[in-house]
Length: 96
Image 1 (tube, rainbow, N blue to C red):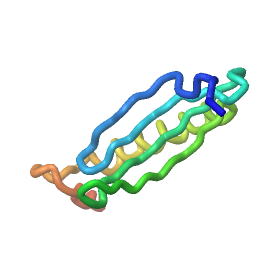
Image 2 (image 1 turned 120 degrees about the vertical axis):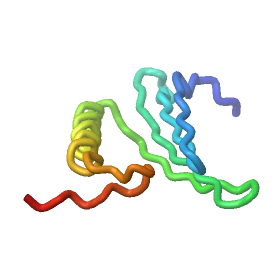
Image 3 (image 1 turned 30 degrees about the horizontal axis):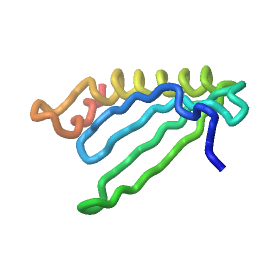
């Protein structure tokens, strides 16, 4: 039986070294609702990929977005403030 509903509404790909992240907005079979999938695809061989997927439903968008924003801001403010000049792992913060 042919799939007649429009599954994928929007997609955004982010390439990051050996990993690629996909942010996809998909509709449900009834086309009355939608959700987001976040997929990490990592090359593990010449033509082999390992994939991990998160399904994010609209009732959780705000909580997920808030937590992600807070986490990124923490890393930027607390962990990346004293970065290695060569672009490596951040140095330890000095003890006051």
